[in-house]
Structure formats: structure tokens, C-alpha cells
Length: 213
Image (cartoon, rainbow, N blue to C red; front, side, top):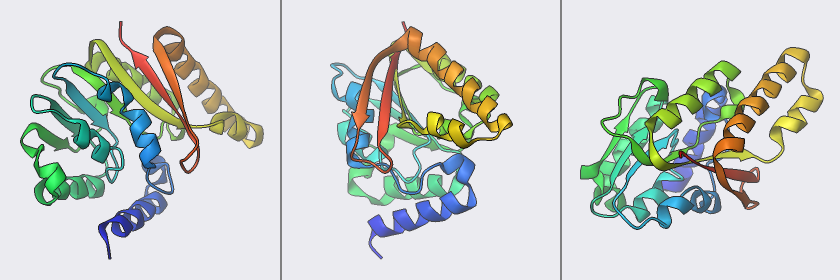
């Protein structure tokens, strides 16, 4: 089976078994990957990049293509199956092997990740809409703790998911979604510099770009 189909099959299997931390039925499209890495593509100096929740590597591949010789790349993935797939790529895929010496895959929750230095760019594929509100707040706090001054956080969310889910949700779920809105809006109102619209994705998505002042 070609690697592309293997990755999609494994992604679907993990979605069925671990929906809360996988959050999507199929990997992100290349159009979403390009939007997520927009700030990285426009930089003019060596940078430190952190990808959180890379999954099977749909966005990772785009990051790898943009890395320059003096950049540093770390990946934090909670799912050990996905982490093993990523490590296999860094060992056997020529595109990944070219940057393997300055890249590392870490298996842990992002809140437990011990960074050596802050990051200029953080790219997150975490399915925040699936998480409890307290966990989402903790994740945002961690992102901004790990960002260097002037650093950029890029994360995506599926268009209109929270409003639509609120319409049919039970009271407890509606309360959780409302709290997620409040947390996201708190950070977006202070730090958002741009929002990308990506219609060629399943489902269509927004990419939010935030900057630490």
C-alpha cells in the first residue's frame, strides 16, 4: 500500500480509537499546510520552530520543505503511533533525513514539554474544540510561555464548528463551547495579526495567526 494510503488509513483508525486527541477524519490538506506555515515562509533569519500535534505529518512535510540550514525544529506529539510514524520518516524519507540532525520528535503533552529555548514559530494542529475549557486555557498559556518575544503562533479551527455545535448541544456541552469561545476570543483580541481562510480542506478551516508582543 502506498505511504499516502497507509497514513490516511492509520489516521482514520486513530480517529476511531482516540477521537478526543485526533479530532479529524482525514489529514489536513496541502492548502491548509501552506496557510499554517505562512509566517515561517516569510521569515528572513534562522528560527526555532515547534509543531504541536503533527499527527501523520500533513503540515510537517511543508515545514520540512521550508527549513533552512541553521533552523531548529521540534515536534511534540501525544499519540505514540503518530510519533513512531514521524520518526520513521526522519530516518527513511530523503526529504526528512536532510533535516533530521536538527529535528526531534517528543512524545508528551505540550504542557510537560521542556524547551531548551523559546520558539520563534509555533504551529499547532491540536483539536482544541474537543478539549475541556481548563485544558484549552492551559494549552494557550503554554504556547505563549514557549514563544519568544515577537514569535508567532498559528493554529487552525474548522469554520463555524462551535456555533453549529451549540445549536444542538446539551446544556453542559453548550457551556463548555461557550467557555472555549471566551478563551479563544481573549487571546485573539489581544494577539491576532491575521486570519487565513482555507476552503480546500475537509472541513474548510480558518488559520489564526497570533503574535507575542
